[in-house]
Length: 203
Image 1: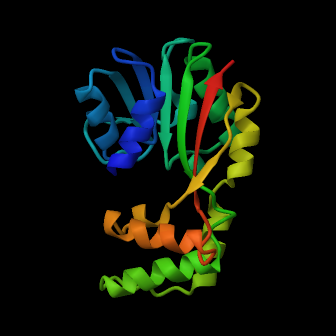
Image 2 (image 1 turned 90 degrees about the vertical axis):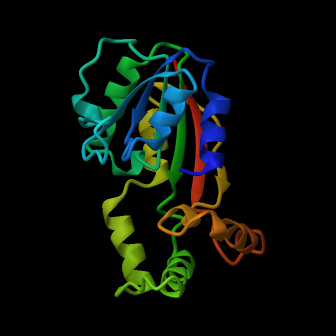
Image 3 (image 1 turned 60 degrees about the vertical axis):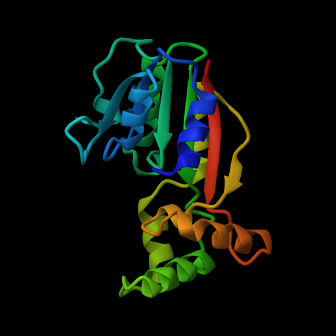
């Protein structure tokens, strides 16, 4: 988890103590950082990589309506299935006025330029992948929800702020040292801004 992600999340959550649901918590790094900061965090993931993350899909989450005062979804909603019922369940367990802090990959923006750059960086690191840029693009677009579909599904229950675009590829098995180059290439139009950050509010 990068420092800028934690800063983005903290800046958009109510102050602790606050009951927070993390969707797609993975290894639980963000949940641990928020817990240390005083939040009451419930972290879920259908395929958790930490004993502190509950092995449950969002659609199957058992919680009373209005249980949580905020939610966080970092690099996770594009994987959620089924999308609309899962997001309806998310809306049910949030209190009215609760923020949903989203950090996403826009799979439509992930084009051959982005895939080629990412594959080149992997090769430089000694982790060459036996896949072409176009194959990587096609694979992602076949299996991940596009950002527009996520936003459309959320709009039934949430008021959404504008998506703030930015770098994302450096966080995918590369590391913070690649962020400056990605940002520079985005600035001159040689890479798309694959990342999107949105803050939504439960109506």
